[in-house]
Amino acid sequence: MPKPPSLPDSQVVPDPALEKRFRRSFTTEYKLSILAKADACQRGKLGALLRQEKLYSNQLQQWRREFAEGGVEALSKTAPGPASARTPEQRRIAQLEKENLRLNRKLQMAEDCLALQKKALSMLDRANSGSDA
Image 1 (tube, one colour):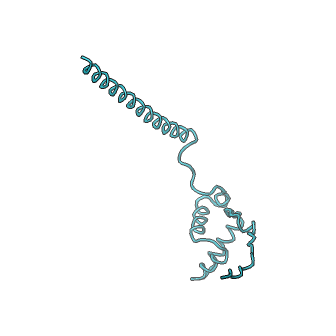
Image 2 (cartoon, rainbow, N blue to C red):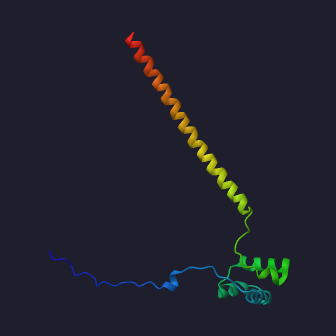
Image 3 (tube, one colour):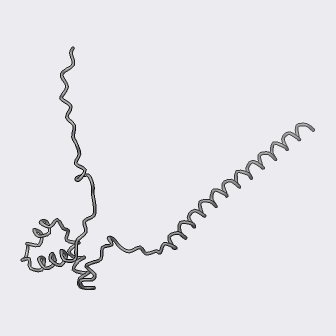
């Protein structure tokens, strides 16, 4: 039975601009304008504004909190996420302690293996010396 004709080879060429993901950053002026628009919104219209601007409600809450706590200067921060609780030295110390613990476990395992080999050799020596006598 003949093979059915195959479909023509169609290749999909990905668009590199769509492939790359990045974190959006917002200017202080943009944040202030969105806060002003959000404050001017009537009841029930805030969701439409957020969808239009492709924002999340938690972003708006964070911007309001930052503006209330530190004014315009607080809105201009750019570092995403919370600040690290540990300094680089503390992280290095924790890493070295973890490595030290791992190496101590490995050393203990090697010492246990040596002790086991000594016991086995001792048992074999006793068994051989007992059969010769």
